[in-house]
Length: 136
Length: 61
Image 1 (tube, each protein chain N blue to C red):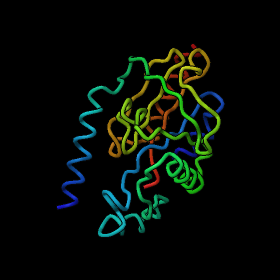
Image 2 (cartoon, chains in turn cyan, blue):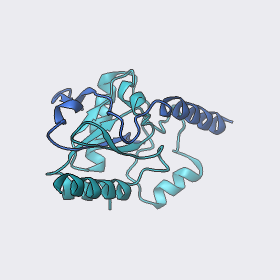
Image 3 (tube, rainbow over the protein chains, first blue to last red):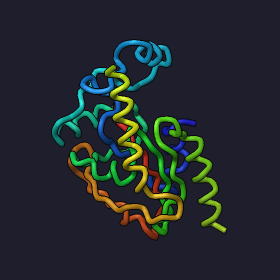
Image 4 (tube, helix red, strand yellow):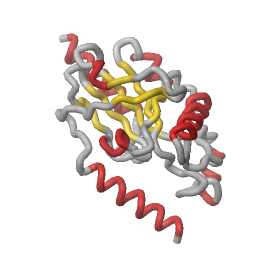
């Protein structure tokens, strides 16, 4: 199950917030636009971009976040972290990470570091368990 | 060499901030953000008592 499916299934019971953070593999950083990773991305038909430079202003960051939202089409509104990466740092979210926050404001599920533990399936199990708990 | 350097930088960043990241049972750090159009302010704590929240962090690359 992908994030799109997860959103479609649970968006009435769970608020989904997609948060765009600092680029993981920009052209001017740890670039995946050449070599084996480039080939793997092509073969997997991944929607991730390989021609993006790391934004240097909030306007640039918002523009890339919009491109990302259009390309990935999760159907989830994208919010943009500030240039000081404050939310990213608070959640140690870079390059990608998933959390579930309960109605009491406490963390119900915290994925391990990305990208290794980026698993919509694990998030789905956490949502299922949590929704059962709060409806009992 | 650049690949090794980039990987080391990423690992260092993750270790530094993950040490203080919220764990299960902790209160989630509050934040306020605008969407990609600079609109629709969202505050995490506004959902407290209302709905659980799934946070999905990522970028385009």
